Length: 350
Image (cartoon, rainbow, N blue to C red; front, side):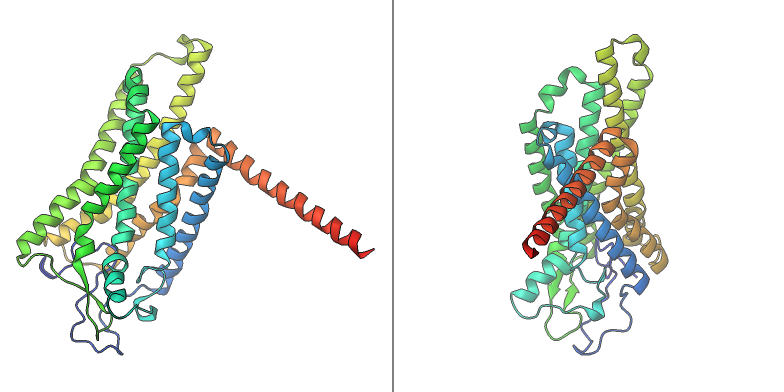
């Protein structure tokens, strides 16, 4: 497979051209999602929606929490990851296999679907936005630890919101190769077909390389550099025993949040890098396509959307306590409400 025929940045599905197929007979050689992977992806999507949904509700329940720059970024990341779980349910070849998918037809419905959904534009925009948000969290943690005197000025809540808006726009631009790379072809199955954006393969490869470096490799490099610098700073910082009680409490709280964010960032790097490296090597014809390697690495990418709530609960006592209190509070509320309704029903029967 050459770089001229492989769909650029199509990490999840490797769909050949179906121009010679009839609309009633699915092509036998396209990589549809196996039943096991479909079940795994469905489970991950459900956990992503549920877990991140709890984080969103916990933060919304106490509005004062969201006034903190770190929590504002975590809140936004939870929204993005929960949306990723939702999008997985209607993106072909993830939870629903291509041969079972009811594709929209006609213009503009079919064309819009191919450009936005089947091209994985929405899915990868959300994924790359997660990467960018983790990068912002890493920079925020670096400023809190290494540039503590400048932190309040650099990370005022208004500036954080502006940064979030900027990365959203940037991610949309950096995924234009997906948006423009798939077209609607009526009369074939599947009706969405990959088509080169530029006439020359070298031009398409250049576009892919520039986008790929900007949307993933540079953010990952910044994440790594931030935590390396944080590690150097903490190695030479004051010990907790040499601080006042108030300073000690702030130091411990800052360390816990930074540790939580570091583990979340490390998980993102571990989940995303293998797929990106594999795909880049394949586009440059260094290696050939492998269904097994492709399946394992894409599952890691998808898994990253559901893992953060578990990391927060495992590494940060404050988040763990807030999640537990929120769940028990809601459980007690519904238990009391059910008891009250039952009592009313019993009274009305007498």
